[in-house]
Structure formats: C-alpha cells, structure tokens
Amino acid sequence: MVIPQLSRKQALLIIGSVLALLALIIWVLTRYISPAPPGKIEMTTGAADAAAHQFALKYQSYLQANGVKLELKTSSGSVQNLERLNAGTPVGFVQGGLGVLSIDPQKTDEDTPLRSLGVIGYEPVWLFASSASGAKALSNGLQTLAGKKVAIGAEGSGTRKVALDLLQSYGVSATNATLSAEAGMAAANALLSKALDAIIIIGAPQSAAIQLLLTRSDAHLVAIEHAEGMTRRLPYLSLVTLKAGSVDPRRDIPSQDITLLSTTANLVIREDLHPALAYLLLEAAREVHKGATLLNKPSEFPHPRGTDFPLADEAQRYYKDGRPFLQRYLPYWAANALQRLLLILIPLLAIAVPVLKTIPDLLAFKDKNRLYRRYGILLRMERDLRTRQLTAQEIREASAQLDQVELDISQMKFPLDFSDRLYTLRQHVDYVRAQLQKEKEGLNSP
Image 1 (cartoon, rainbow, N blue to C red):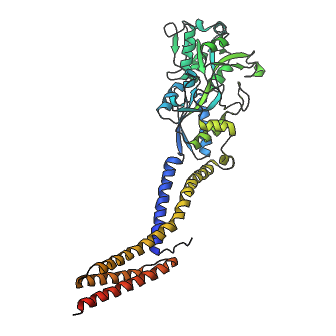
Image 2: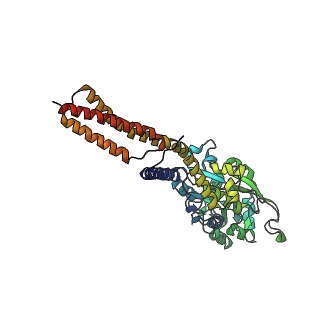
Image 3: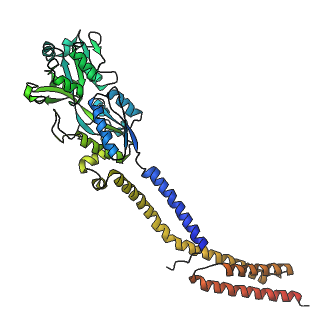
C-alpha cells in the first residue's frame, strides 16, 4: 500500500486526534479498569494494649516501608471492628464466631461485602481466677461464677459476646452475677488486686495482659473439663493445647497440659479494596504471623482454612501460587506501576493497530472526495451545456467557477499516486472551458 503524503495541517490534525483519543482511553483505563492503589488506607484494630493493635503496628511499619500509609483506629473489639468494616473501613481484625460463615456456612459472596485474607492466629478463651480454690471449682463448670464479680470485656468487643455465650450455657447472667466491662491490663490488674473473682479474656498469647497473668502465682488459669463439649454447643469454638512448661519451663509453668477453648482471628477487607493492597496485606500478614507462639508452630499462619468470611480472590491465588509474578522480583511500587502500564498498553495496542491500518484508507478517501467535488462541478456544467442555452450571466458565473477550480487544484497537495487523476481533472477543466467559450461565441454571433 502506498501511504499518502501528509500535509502539515493533516499531520497536526491526525496527531491531535490520536493524542486526544489516547488521553481519553488512558483516563478510562486508569479510572475504571486499572486505577492506581491508594497511598493511604485505614485499619480498625482493637484496644491499644491488645495484641491485635500491636500486630497492626507491625503491619503499619511493613506497609510504610512499601510506600503505603496505614492509619490505625483503636476499637473496643471485634464487634465494633465488624461494624466499621460494614460501614466502609477497608481493613480490620475480626474474631472468629462473628462472620457470616460462622453463623451460616451456606452464605455466599453476595451476602456480605467483606472478604477474608485468611486466619492469622488463635485467640484462646483465657479464664483466670483470683484464687486456686476458685480455679479448681471453675474447672468443673462456670456455674460457680454465680454471685461473683467477673470481667467479660467491653461493650462492642468479641470477648464480651463469647463470654456471655459461655456464661449463659451455665446459667450465669447479669441477673445473678456482677459482670464488669473491664478488659486487657485493667482487668488483669483488677484480678491481681482481688477486686475481681475471675476474668475472661480472648486474645493471642502475645497479649500483654495474658503474658502477665500466665507468669503470676496469684493468677490461676482455669482448664475447663467441659471444653470439648462446649465446642459442640458453640461450633465457632475449637480446642488448643497450652503445653506443660511452654510459658516458663524453669518454673514449670504450666505444670501440665491445659486444653483451652479458642476462636481464631481473621484479617478482613472490603471486597472493593484494591488488589495490589490486598496482596501487600497478605505479605505483611505472612511476615507478622509466621513465627511460633505458645500455641502454634512456625509458618502455621496465615492460612485460608476455617475463615469466617468468603475468601478474597487475591487470597485464593496467594495461597495457591504465592505472590504475583512481578512482586516476586520487583518492589511493590515498581511491580504495581509495571502491571498497570501493561494493563493500559495491551488494550491500547489492540485499539491502535486497526486504527493505524485504517488511516491511509481514510486519507485516500479524503483526497478522492476533494477531487470528486471538483469533478461534480464540471459534470453539472457539462450537463447544462448539453441540455440548454446558457445566458451571458450564467457563462460568466461558470467561468468564475472554473477559475476557482483551477486555483484549488494548484493550491491543493496530493500524494504522488494521485498525479494521473489531477492531470485528468485539469484536462476536464480545459475541455469545459472550451465548451463555455463556444457557448459565449454563439451568443455574440449575429
């Protein structure tokens, strides 16, 4: 194909049109198909002295190293976290037993806007008594807490929900016991000062309050004999074992294996969170939770089993194949930028190739059209000359039109492959002009 030679005006027009089209396409792609991940997101955590918030601080540091600012919002616990997530907060920790799948395993993605990135650790139900006799009595059942002072966690916390479920199973409630909203270190200190008879705390073993109570001789961890039976009544609970000597082998703490009821902690996001940030959070979770604890071996967490929410698509791919290809070899910002560039370039190329192929045909059509318009003028003049007698005024107007056609031809620029057509057009102009001259002479003859 012979590509037409472009005039300066044609070239500028085409370049301008192409650039405008590219700008529009890029805007649509970057706005709706491959938007940039936000540089700042919010995370709802837990009480400031709780393990969840301490974990969140490590997430914050990891994301900061990758150029993303993670703003942390403390909360009263998982119930409030869940409320915030449903209201629009993009990331948060949620205790097991609160998600839609724990309530109804048949629920689907359409039933909630929330997605799980996986289970990040055990959160046992720690029941401590202020006396050895109280702990021994509680091991046979929580009904002995009737008439006692018990801390069950703050309003809006997952601890309070689970504690109330447990106490209700044994017939204990606010009508026959004093249920305090103290939690964390405040509850631990109240127990040690004998202001409380017992406390129920749910949290990772790294929690400061739990670490303190496990090493104090005046706080007594209760092993509930009915633990396995309670998992039948409350299916969101499971069993974990605190091994003998795991807390302090030198002091033989604990002196025997202790079976604990446990929930799990879920890392939860909203379904509209940018995929790049979901993968970054998964990497942060792996770094933060991969270590061993009193209850799990190294690299046991995070994992996708037993989540309380539908597993995010990014998490499914992550647990199956690992990090996305580009993120294995490039920093977060570089991998994301290159991925977005490829997502933009591929559709652009798909559009640009056929467009570029049609440009020569469009230009040729335009040049033909310019010639055909002049041919049309000449053909109308010829038809008039054949069918009727022109007046002197009409002959002068026709001659002026011919002069304009000749001027247009001399000023217009055409590609070389149009040379024969231009030559034919000039011959046609000369022919019509000769016919007009004969018509004029006929009018002037006596």
